[in-house]
Length: 153
Image (cartoon, rainbow, N blue to C red; front, side, top):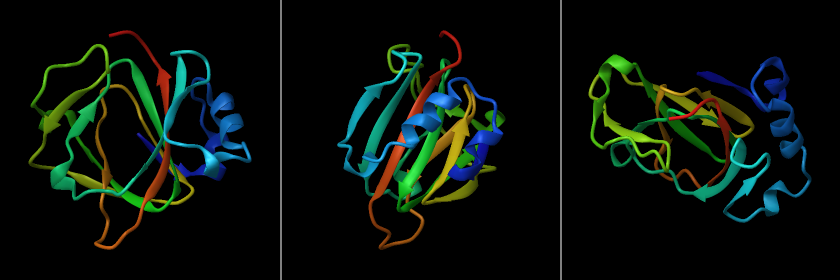
């Protein structure tokens, strides 16, 4: 996993990273409605998300097999939790269509506060629980989640 500021995105050698940087340079980002936009078909697409983070206990840990997530917070802040694979207790079967499996985790959870203008990268197999509330009263999060194909299920 990676956690850094958007201005440092060029430091990383990731598939389609130039396409991601080009998309982030758009001048109309704040005007985008919640949707999904294909950039390079299903090899690279982005989900535009606006929501109020929830307490961590209301969210589930997830992993992906095919896609890496590049999660870019443009407004607000949230906590993203991570846990080692050895702690994962499956609560659903893997969904090939949606490329995710959900888990329960009781131990060895780490919190990362992800503020405005930062990003995380979660590679296939890395457990993460995004969209978690940092503090009561925190407002809406505006986030882009780039889905980068890394393999097949």
